[in-house]
Image (cartoon, rainbow, N blue to C red; front, side):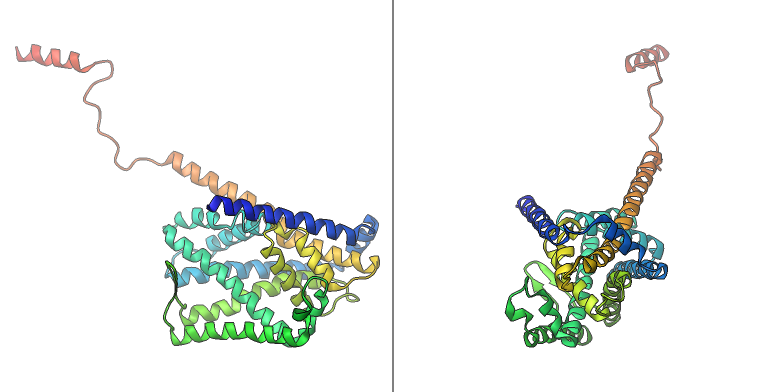
Length: 350
């Protein structure tokens, strides 16, 4: 049954990619390569550096997700370097390949079991990291909708009119913030664990919850900052607006199960930016491509190398491992069988 669901979600992701790319091509087919090159050349060098710094902030926060989960499990003694490399590799792969195909659980399982964690502990770690990301999305999404409820009107062509209404958007924003407040209250007051079938969800300790509320928004702020710094000033609607558009685009891309959100992310982002002319589309396309390069493609290439080196190291250790209890020397000498030995013993006895 699980394999069937994976195939279904994979087909849904593929359909999302095809459909989104088709619609996106309709938006960008009039662009020339020279206009895109000019848009890249117009980005100042220090904006590239700020975008790169934003990428480092995002991936540092993702590493903090793993660290927080390990603290929740009471696991200590694993170096920050190991946690950072494991987290970086996990997210670089899952962001590009797609959560429905490769969630990163396998990478974490291979890495953390080598440090002594059990399969159950790795499962809790993966779940808590996923929840931390979701918590950050809900927190920032609620803030953006309360602060600027008119942002959803940018998606009138993709969302029902009821949701794009500013009054409705603000209500949704308050509801999202109320969910976060309930989670905080449950952690502070130590509510009873929430039981869902065979799973028991416990509220984390106060210090764990506080770390989550810092790390999760920090990662999303860093990721949104890549596009913010790559956009030209003339088309930049401000960081809050870029953050809101990014959250909507990234969330839809994840929900689509499209590998890397390919086409889906770009379609939602371009729609929300409300671009009219090719002169506006080229710089925004350049900014989105920089985001894909810094946040997705370069980390993906590095992650593949890391995985290959790690697996090579594990294989080398397995091949060179010596048995601490070597077998005793054989009773039968080379070239002699048991019948020969028995014959000699009989002769001695005589």
